Image (cartoon, rainbow, N blue to C red; front, side, top):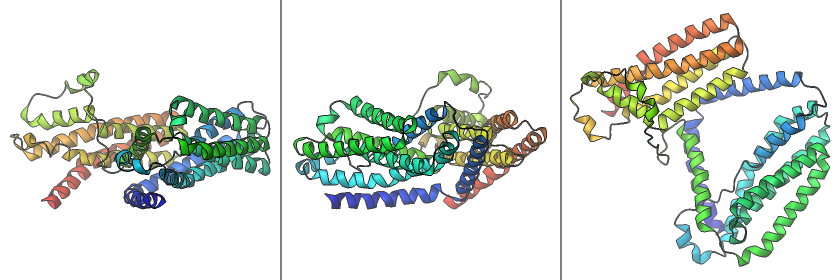
Length: 408
């Protein structure tokens, strides 16, 4: 069964590598560098204003570390057919699940160490901790994550899975107790408590798993939800067949379509507008990118960095809207519409112009509120206006014409 997991893991890693090459393109890496640079600069400025003895500092550290401890779930890679074909091998599945837990340790523990590394200056300044104390808390956090993954493995069996809410409550309660004891008492106590918990869970699991049945349906559902979250992230950057957008009526937005006239040359404008509002795939993408850009602009200071970030997010939104032009190509009725192709392109350009204008306006508004520099706001407004015009009126028609030519 360990060989089965190894085979599935290789297939899974190949699939992830395929999508990661598309996600970490030049533009995303460029945006990520600015994002991390902006956060680092803001974090550095906040640390300069802190002093030791702040009452809320341990509370902030507790919330952050408790949330981070829950990141990284058990990646079992089980499939729907396993509950039928692997049921005769249920006892041998324990080796499969143990191999899955070992694999899950890698990324999960890296997340814990990165979080402690980022939080260490805060602990050093706000709590006046020594390097030894920070390292002890890091050890406690790593052992805590190992314990939580053991609990995830234990919950795969009937004895704990019968009360699912208790399983998640135990994980959160254990994390809060261990981290709180390390922050308010001493991190060495946290190491001792979590070490006892880890050994206890390991001994209990070793004694009980042979007599328990695997909760196949729940494990398959958990794995499907885990993979769906990963695919949704990839879907922000490229088309993922495993993620299908849903359709919502949204009657409260009907007023947006009153300006569209019932004319033949505006048929596609109505169709594209309705599809954008009702569908969750592209509308959710636009909303998420706009919100992320607004949050980033709120915390980033400077004269040119906010302008560059605003222009970058406008480009990302415009670039991600291009596939929406082919949204209805598979609908046979659209090919019999008595509508000129130029009308379709004109309607799409008008929709892109409207969406980018709204997104640019929101980004500019946040930039003005957070930056409060008239010169920066003026330059940003000019840059956004020119960029929206170029992306919607020049780049989009040329890109779509080139795509149609290659397709033909």
